[in-house]
Length: 224
Ligand code: ATP
Ligand code: PRP
Ligand code: MG
Image 1 (cartoon, rainbow, N blue to C red):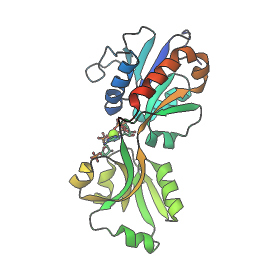
Image 2 (image 1 turned 90 degrees about the vertical axis):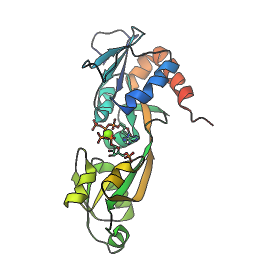
Image 3 (image 1 turned 45 degrees about the horizontal axis):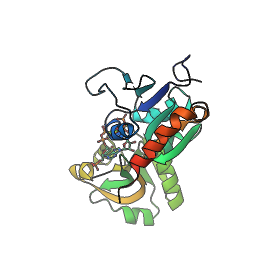
Image 4 (image 1 turned 180 degrees about the vertical axis):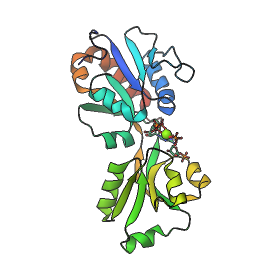
C-alpha cells in the first residue's frame, strides 16, 4: 500500500489542499520541525519538497484528501469535518482536531423567506448543497421533508435564482451570505479541520508518524 510505490517506510506523504488548509497547517508542520520549501500558490507542482528529504506534501482538492489517505497514496492529511462527514471515515484514523479552518455548517435562506413557518407547516423544502449527507441527516432528524439538489460550489446563488428555497453551506464571517442577501436561519454544527492518518501507515510507520502527530497535537491546542 506504500505511498508512491516502492518507497521505504521512512518516507512520509502528507496530503493538503491549497489555500486555508495549506496556510494553517504550515505552523503545525513547523512545530514538528518540517518546513515546506515550495509554494503551491506560485508553483504548478503538485508534489512539494520539505526540508526533510523523507517528507513530501501532495496538493489535492479539499474533498479528495480523505480518498488519498484512505487508499494509502498519502500517509496522512488534513481535512475539514464537513468533508470527512461526506466521505465517511472508512480506513481513516482521526487522532486530532487541529482547530484550524474553523467555521460552522448552517442553513441559509433568501432574506424574506419564512423558514420557520415553512418548517412548521410541513412544507417540502428544496435545499441546494455540496454537503448532501449532512443535509439529509439534519433534516431527517428534524422530520423535515427535503428535495436535495447537489451542487459543487457557489451555493449562495441557488435561492437567488429560484433553484432552491434554502442552502446548507459553511459560514464563517457571514460576509458571503450578507453580500448575497441571504440569512442564516439554523446552525447545524461547528466545523474545524482534522488530522487523518491511513490506518496501515499508522502501524507500519508509527515511529515516523507518532512524533509528528504529537507535535501537531501540542501546537493545535486552543490557547487559553
Ligand atoms: P474546492 O475549492 O476544491 O471546492 P473547498 O472550497 O472545500 O474545496 P477550501 O475553501 O480550501 O476548499 O476549504 C477547506 C476547508 O476549510 C473546508 O472543508 C471547511 O472545513 C473549511 N472552510 C471552508 N470555508 C471556510 C471559511 N470561509 N472559513 C473557515 N474555514 C472554511
Ligand atoms: C467558503 C464557503 C462560503 C464562504 C463562507 O467559500 O463556501 O461561501 O467561505 O465564509 P464567510 O462566512 O466568511 O463569507 P470560500 O472562501 O472557500 O470560496 P470557494 O467558493 O472558492 O470555496
Ligand atoms: Mg471553499
